[in-house]
Length: 224
Image (cartoon, rainbow, N blue to C red):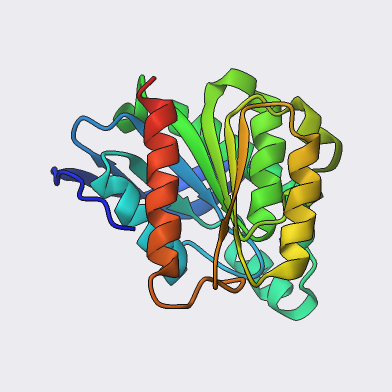
C-alpha cells in the first residue's frame, strides 16, 4: 500500500516538554496548514529516537499532520529501566507523562487550534488509551502499533476517541490481547491485522503499511 501525500514546509523545534514536574526532551514538527498534531507514546525501553516511530512520524507529516516525539522517561529513569525493566510497564506513570505533555502542547503556538491525537507502541499503547480516556473529546484519534491496550484496564470503557489497533499477523499473543481490549472499547474502533508481520513489523513493506494506515486514520478523524 502506498499513498502519495503533498509535501509542505515543516516547522521544526527541539523542545523541552514540561510534564509531571519533569522536563523531557522532544522534537515538535508541524507542517504548514497541519490538521492536527500526534503525540507519540513509546514503550518497552524505546525512546523518541526509535527508527520505527520516526518512520511513522515522517509519513504523518507528509500527510499534513504534525508530530511530537518525546521521551516519556528522564535520562536517570531510562538508565534505571534498562536494569529493572519496570518503568516501561508503569502505565500510570507513562499516562501521567503523556497527559502532562498534552497540556504542554496545547499551550504551544505551533499547536494552537489544532486537533490532537496519540500514537502508542508497545506499553505506550496502554498509556495512550489511559490518557485518552482522561481527556475525552480533546483527543481526536488514537492508533496503537503492536501495542498493549489491555494494560489500560478499566480505562478502556471510558475512551471516546476513535481507536485503531494495528497488530502483526504472526504476533499471536498480542493479537489475543488486542482483541480482548477491543471488546472493552465503547468508542468507534477497528483492529487491523497486517498479514505476514511479526511484532516489530521488520518485514519488507510492513512498517510502510502501518504508517499509511495510521496516517489515513488520523487524517480522516482530524479533518472532520
